[in-house]
Image 1 (spheres, one colour):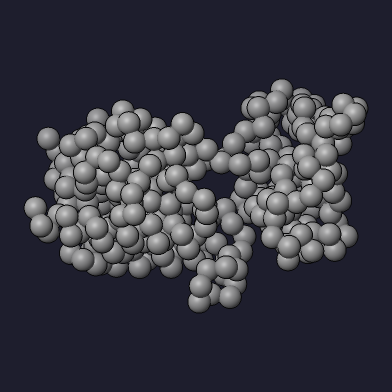
Image 2 (cartoon, rainbow, N blue to C red):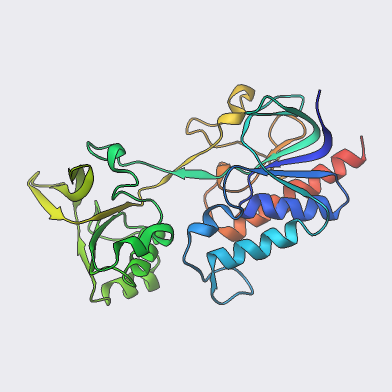
Length: 304
């Protein structure tokens, strides 16, 4: 057996960072693992306007503040890819190292769902992007299409208007799912046009680079082509819960089932944030989960 610690946290998004704050501040020997940039989806978000106490903040700025606080109480942050967590709270990395812990908090979040249409996978990174904040500047003066009608789709559409010539939003229904104030901003933005009751059928390309998208009317089945240089799908998320697959703690969609303490049915193994089975997935609910899980883990560990 390799290293032995009190608490291992997998994932450095808001849930994992909050858990790290509460765990390390309580005196637990804590390791925080992530295989991406600290902050999770915060670093892909242009602006956060609904986090209590903060009127408006860039996602990257909030992520950095959380990360600095999370590591200020002695926790160790390590870049690493966790591939398995077992019932004995042993955490295995893709390097083969196994870390023994007294509690594990899985805060791995979700990944963007693909459109699963012809031409998509081969043009990811060549016109198909899942992060407007990351890639928006590459489309300066160009025409792009955003797929989806929720908050993320509309917020990122507004962000893209800083750079692009035009944004076309495509939605399956004839109404948006996003909050009303965001809808109003979109409707009033002269760079944005909206196509309702259509679904994407194929990503078109020239020499491997996105050149357009084929849409189908959900009622008439008629098709049309929108010529564009960028496509941003925002059609939902899927949980990244593979490391818990062997423990029978997932629902039919792959989300982790936890109790009011954010603990799974396996004692000492917790989940927090978007990877959990829940209704509302927001920064504030993720940090709430992380705090609850870490505090419960602290009491369980100190009473062993």
